Image 1 (cartoon, rainbow, N blue to C red):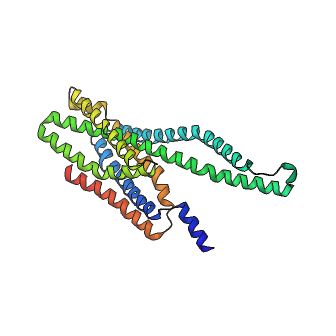
Image 2: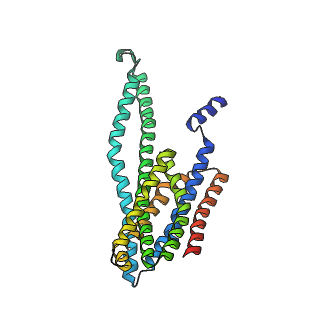
Image 3: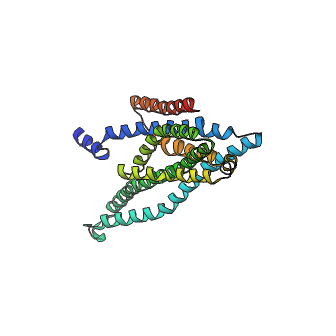
Length: 285
């Protein structure tokens, strides 16, 4: 009996060690995202504030980013839910219809048990489909937030080269170092979202286009101040998106961990992610 239960657990999670390692990387991603928001993006946005209205404006854009990401995920989930359930019902109907006896040979009690078992099986069949869909949406939201974040980095690089080449090189190097822990966390998020390693790598390269667009925008502006004024909303907006991804899409999965040792490792990884962002901020800013 115990051997059967063990085999069943292995079928449900054939790579428990890999799953735990992925959760550790996700924990690091949470720390990196939150560290980026509260130690880099928001302080940078607040540094340009000159009045209470400016601070209020920053908060409004952060909330707008958070709510927009929530709205996108809700819309995409609602549109796919009915279709997925319908497909699950059809699949379950096909499976249950094979090899059944004729209705005249089924008594009332057997029919009741049959319907109950069908409902349970249908529920179990539909849950993984909905979960997989939800996970993929969070991955695409992360890519969207990264494109916007890279756009701000491109603005910083382009604006710094308008000052002088030396400042531009230093700024570029600082941003590259800053992105290393961030990209590690983003890669883990994409793997969790259903991407394989190659697709996740290609998606990360695609988000770099946001940096190129930001650099072009900065270099085409008449001045650094003009570019900054037109794109000042991007920093708090991206902050809201990162907060949503970290606290809504990832943390609930980490909270489900019941093993104390693994939970302690996850907390350490979150702190490590924050520490990396703090170290970069202290060194280069």
